[in-house]
Length: 382
Image 1 (spheres, rainbow, N blue to C red):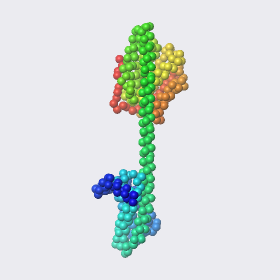
Image 2 (image 1 turned 60 degrees about the vertical axis):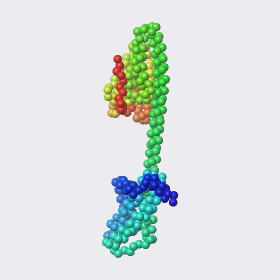
Image 3 (image 1 turned 30 degrees about the vertical axis):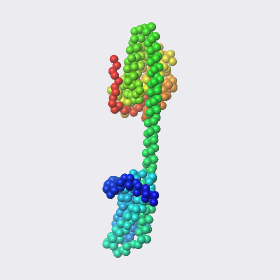
Image 4 (image 1 turned 45 degrees about the vertical axis):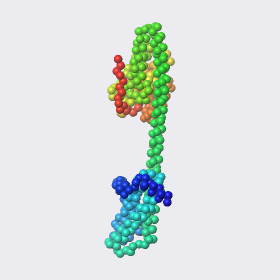
């Protein structure tokens, strides 16, 4: 009774009019038709095994085969209507059970009339079976089709469970990305003020020692702020923007080092507009400079090379420096970058550190190549 009430309420909710029923039948897919045909074949083979489908001998075979197909397609018509009522919800088993009972009763009666009529006409005289035979055929059909529908609903439940798990995983990844973006903004908020204060203090000292150098460093700082300020709160960036910011940062360092730092940047228009996480390149450079200063080699002639290239659908950005700093020392300072790459791209990104033969380290960031939808090129440097 509960299943009947549920089905009635659902039918009223979707206004299950004759037109709606016809639309549900029109929505039957080719896959459903093939599955129903196979069900009819399975029914025939099952009844052939019990001897029921062999009524009338060889001439009765096609009659019985068509009868089983009528059984299957009659149940299909009931099944698709219930799908429309329930929205294909596998948890509403009562509605499907009621559809099986009603559909099996209707199709069993139609098949019984068809079989008796066709056998009487083309095979041999046959009396109309009594109620006992009808109930036997009906219950037999209910059990077989009920098992088939149970399998269908079970597969639907499994599919829905997988879909929920997939959505939950996507939400988790999205939450991790938002967390990483917050971390990037926090890092930016920490690094930039400290860098700014240190540079201003150095400019102040230089004005007392060499006003011309101090003026040049102040110009470089202004160029850096022009590059950094417009995207200080951005959670996405491009290769061109990040290299522009790095260029301005290194120009300040070159002035600070007395032009003992040689800078080379190699990139192309192909990757200039490629997406690149903010605050990935600058910490690499800042760490390299810090390690170089700690090693006591900051006063020596040195060079930094930044290159970006596209290769087989991947973006490779390389930072090379000639300071004699071990790979392990560099790795200790950039572990958080590897962690953020993993959170943003999963296993589809990497940071590889390599020792250079002539001394120094190469840091290679590899991520999927993705061009920004609206390219935001960095302003041209003077």
